[in-house]
Image 1: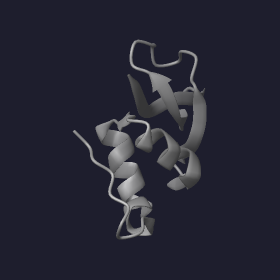
Image 2: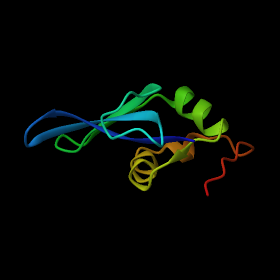
Image 3: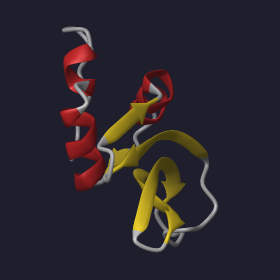
Length: 89
C-alpha cells in the first residue's frame, strides 16, 4: 500500500519536509516512489504537485493526517472539480 507522507530533510532545528509517495513498509527516510511537494513549517511555505498527487490518490494512496491537513490548508481540495470525488478511509 502506498501512502502520501512527510520525509524529513534539512538540518538540526531547521526541518523541511518533503511530501512523498512511499510504500507503507518503508521507514521515514526510506526510498520514495516520487516526490510530490514540500512543506517548510518555519517559513510556512507549501508546494504541491497537484497532478502527481491526484495520480497517486486515484491509484488508492492514502494521505497521512498531517499531509491531509497541509493539503487542506493549501486549498488542494477546493481546486478539485465538483465531479471529481476522492475517497479517504
